[in-house]
Image 1 (cartoon, rainbow, N blue to C red):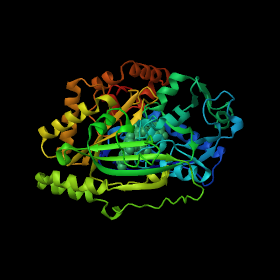
Image 2: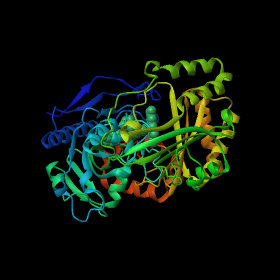
Image 3: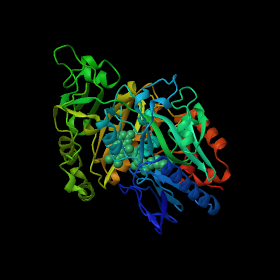
Image 4: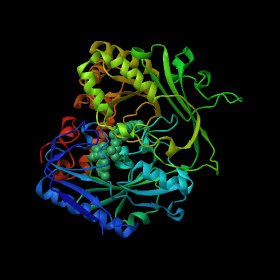
Length: 510
Ligand SMILES: Cc1cc2nc3c(=O)[nH]c(=O)nc-3n(C[C@H](O)[C@H](O)[C@H](O)COP(=O)(O)OP(=O)(O)OC[C@H]3O[C@@H](n4cnc5c(N)ncnc54)[C@H](O)[C@@H]3O)c2cc1C
């Protein structure tokens, strides 16, 4: 039977140790029994409700988390109770007969995912069954629910972020409530699944949009229904290329066809990539870009689905920490080390053909790395890169590099990918004081320049109540209204956190 286990822990940290020594009152894990059944799902939801009842009674903040891969404080709950969900990982295909006739989407590919399902587990479930995710992040260790809750994205240029694949959400916002939320504009079920889960079905666009990216602040998400796509193959190419005017324009949302992307031309004119990423770093490789372009290909029945780890750096789990310490002693080494690491990480790829789940495989989780990201309108990408390069010159030699990825405007009031076609500019590096200083400087200068932007909730960020208000405007008001309408006073406190309080998204008062 599903159960919640309690651990007498007093300290908590996230996977990458960017949040550490967080004082907590206890730690909890949601577990399941072997074998998938809807009865087990009902028992699991009841167990979560029991814990929420305790949190309400004891006025404890309760924060569900996935893989704790967020570099930010999104998953932290100082003084409260973290609830680990990773063991609660059942999957169920939704029978087509449960999908209403008017559903706009692929009725054959809907799958119910319990909260702890990781992106890796989902890939390994979908692909042998002829289905695939349409998009995901660059690695697969996150949970699907954790990823959607922070608006995680990849670089599938014609797709929104990951939450764009979610069609319904099972949310538990109180001890006596178990909700199944679908958008009124496109409900994906006829209500029987909600009944089987013991949940009350609510068909409401605003509530759905608020719950899509909710940072744990609306309650515990117990399951989501996702829409998969027919499986496909990705042909990936990567090259270090001259940053030509054509590539420069393509990076700003211009014509990809004239940019001579690696692997684009196979004799019948340039193909449009499914995935496009450009890594441009004037401080270490002026005039050049590492460009990755991947093209969608039809599935080949002879393709072997092998998900074995291929990372050559598994043994170097703490390499980044060693490098960080080295750089603290000798900061002058930063550009050389950064250049060497980039060349290694971005080594050439010449037409590698893999499934989606094989292409974005496991990144060996390394303590000592740090990432920040902002989403901006794609046509401002070079302004942003210029500001980031200038920030780097101000700060000095930081072991960090910039990467540009692309995605479409994403659903959810708090989705940080907000422009119709957005560039997401990453600042990735070794978690050293200069890297942190660079992130702070870059964001301060971006803000001063007035370029519309929003920061990745799950990465290191400089967000404040004011910057969140500037970035989200009326969507923030909509999200706050849904939260106020959904939660009672106890819920507003229990599902908040000091970080969310500081951003004006929750209140410290009971
Ligand atoms: C190596 C690495 C690579 C990454 N690559 C990318 C990338 O390519 N693109 C990108 O956009 N980001 C990327 N990120 C950031 C990361 O994907 C996100 O921060 C993501 O949220 C992490 O998922 P998680 O399961 O670890 O969630 P967690 O960090 O555990 O939680 C994230 C948020 O979700 C909430 N949450 C989780 N489960 C529940 C639940 N059941 N109910 C309610 N709330 C819940 C938490 O409270 C928290 O607010 C990367 C991070 C790392 C470390």
